Image (cartoon, rainbow, N blue to C red):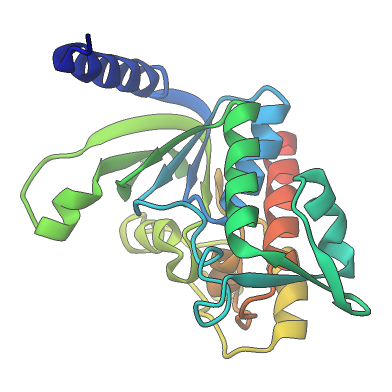
Length: 256
């Protein structure tokens, strides 16, 4: 016999236990797109306490949609070995261009991150940050549904040693810091430089180069890195995104 109240209790208790255990962590990552999931995987794999907040229902950012809703993505030669590490099947379309199913890629990244120990909470929006002594020391969260419905509901706070902005083109966490901190970002102008028009070859390189600390204890990766430090977008080629996630994990580990 199946008892509905036991099902309810199991869901509520197991979720709340994990949420309570995540209030203090080593790293909070905003955004469970490809770069955020990669970063979470590499950090958790090394034993760091990692929490990922994703505002959407689904994970993967723009990856599941592939290009124009054709669920295929491409990576270049330099990133193909990461497909092998995540057990993502692929084939060479032309020399140096490797094609994979975007749904399989999203599922594989999610699976690896979770099994490495990263805790992922979807349907949660980071609406503010905690800044102490001119350093980011945590985030303020609320349910995404509260934001969508424009309800006046107070949020709660989670602390961490480092925060990673992996929110994509919007670079939402860095924009919050820029608006509220009163200090300058670690960019040429001290402000968000802004994303440029598509140029896949340059963008892939810049996505990795621009993956760095944007404000004390706040790092950027993926498309957020180009939006913050000023680089073009790249479209449905994802090698730079994967490499950016790996790089930011390495930078965070050095910081910690």
